[in-house]
Length: 329
Image 1 (cartoon, one colour):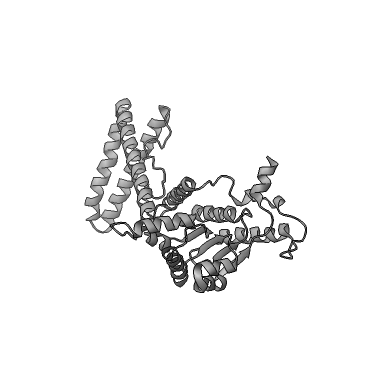
Image 2 (cartoon, one colour):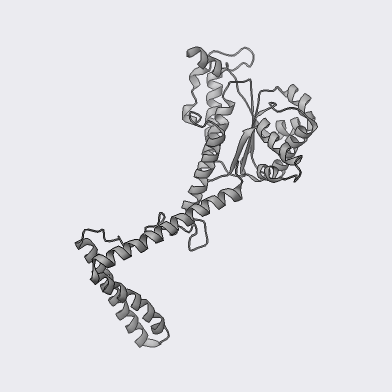
């Protein structure tokens, strides 16, 4: 998936394209109206002339300057009103000769006068992030509203001692609240439980909400993340682009921990991702089908220690939903 700098570059390029198209359209409209209405050219000449004369008037001082500015303002207003009348008399909207920026607030620059980033640039980055997620994963049907508790038993589970439907309802509420209040300082989460209980669904739901709010999300299975890390690490260039992106993103999601091919490299990478992000206070969401014993046997005690003590652990219970859906046809 694309990194933060790449997403910003693509969003800035889109804004630059919008600004260029808007200015080209403005020039086309000016030429069009100038041909149709000779009176417009005179009014436009007046407007341009008032701007040129203003710089000269500013050099003056005292009451004379104030009177000159007031007279210039009145002349400018009269010319603009005449242009508006010409446009409406010929069937055009009064603002037809305003540059048609997509975002009139920042004029498609992405920046505000106070130096802050405009909401339109944030929205573009968010849309690009969602597009990246959609390319890599099936997002349709993986929102919070699509998570149905009807697949979870309403009788007490003998193994866990909880009612799966009630328990999973609490987890759903927790994940909604987590997504609503997500920030780059949120807690890290560990989703534990057998396959087909909704861990991936809720991970994707959180990922989508975080991305919609403009946060950079890196989502993938442990196998996907580690395959890319291994490819770059052992390449001739030994790039660190993927590792830097996984460590720097606002939210890292490692789905299906334990699905990757076990090796000393993958174990070291998992520990580095977990430990470094915890050290910098960055949230990570990990899901796994493995038990605590299986996690310790595979990743050693230091990884399990981080997961058990520094992550909020959520135990998913119930029966395999994928199998139920297949039986339902």
